[in-house]
Image 1 (cartoon, helix red, strand yellow):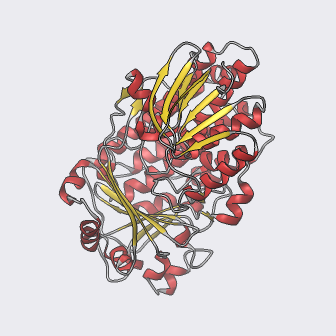
Image 2: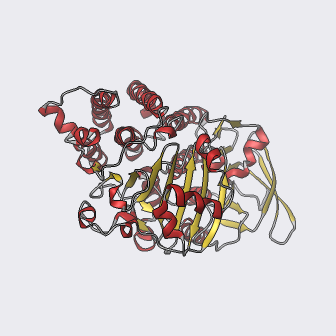
Image 3: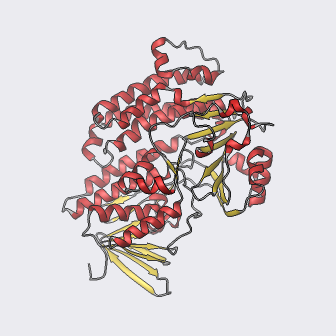
Length: 524
């Protein structure tokens, strides 16, 4: 490359691009990296980006790989799990049915201020010698075999061109590389989202003064720290607290619910909430709106993400599944780990074509399995029984397979992935069978009469067993993955029966150790 040109151009300075630059410079200090970002730093801490909630893979990546553990502990909120509420509007919120945990599982996750993280990483990168050009408008990218080009207008309005060995698109829905190479691909899942932030801390704990309701949680008054979901047929609303004191609100709907709601602005969103989720509407009545975004048909895939020619896509520049379960940071983590691995391999003089192909295959299967969790299932989101089974199954599969592979550092090991293909194919088949059953049930769009019950997922021993495999660093993947397979095989038998119209399966003492009293709670 000519003098002044970098080894790597990263287009996009959100968490995906900044995170990748951090990995690359720390693993390969000799690399010259230039990051191009449309916004000016420092960005607003409460920035208008969806994805404040993290789950286990994304949290592990941010806190361990990027070294943000202390930053999260001091600047952000630790989550109290995922929590769902079911039922038509009630006089008192305690009459809603609740699905969640009474105590935190031993896998820390966080509610993050995206802008705060981005500003922190940008300052670190500058100190490490990475060139960050902000306030730029990327006009085009040209991709070749070993030589990439980015044309942009800098913050002074001057046209600039950079050449590099690698170009990474981390610029989100601008779709720079997708548009250049025609890589757009449908995900076969349709969803629609409206989200906004308000300048107010909204605490769900304040929505009832019933002592018996507050006492169901070990840490009284801490429900608000969960990613709270208000559920209904074809939709869910999120309530996510942020460390700044702001709150993120989202309405996510399938096409049926979205077309019926006909929401195009904040006032219409508030009117819809007043009818369907009046407790949230009341909490918003004196709040100031900070931003408002409406996105139709948000989910998409990509034909190719990693090329040995010298380009790759990460974050929303590549794929987007769905906001439910908050997997966005997971895909950033997985994509960035793969890209960092490939670039490091090449920098060390090793061939990368095989790794690109195998890891592309792994990422695509990871994405397809994630999308299957949502496809044609929103109709059942108001169905307490279905969602109680679904969340337990989805947790078991996610923690027992996907998180396990990540925690055991297997996701960039081609040899490991190839060795476990039979086990992975089997558990993926189990997952597809269960997701088909959820889709069938979801078509009924059931709403059960609320009973004010609390279904405590913390009391499911199988989830503790699976989590124990993640926290036990001495347990090899060769032992842990078959254990997960066994758990999933047993769970599928019980959960299939629980989803039937007339569940009949008796639970033996041995089986009760796997399911505890969860089945009884769900079917009450």
